Image (cartoon, rainbow, N blue to C red; front, top):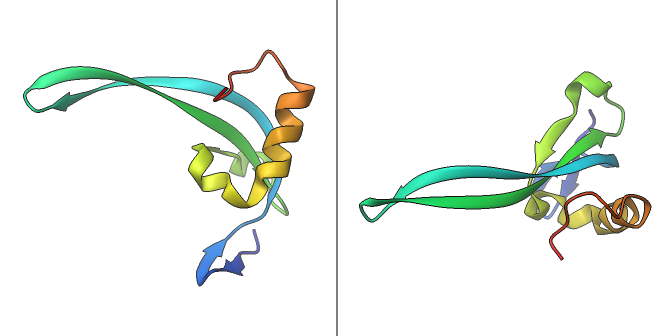
Length: 82
């Protein structure tokens, strides 16, 4: 993985989005347990083998919006923010 310097942060380049899923979890908030759901994408990183793929939240993919949009056009049944 070759990191790229974007806004002084090292960031690796996304090759493609493999799949998406909603991750559910519980967290204690002000003394009570609350349920949360978040969308995550399984990312293939450019120059890395598939065993280096990672689950990432949308905010980690701000520099790959075109790839996210392409993924959803090609996979309309996969979970999405919309």
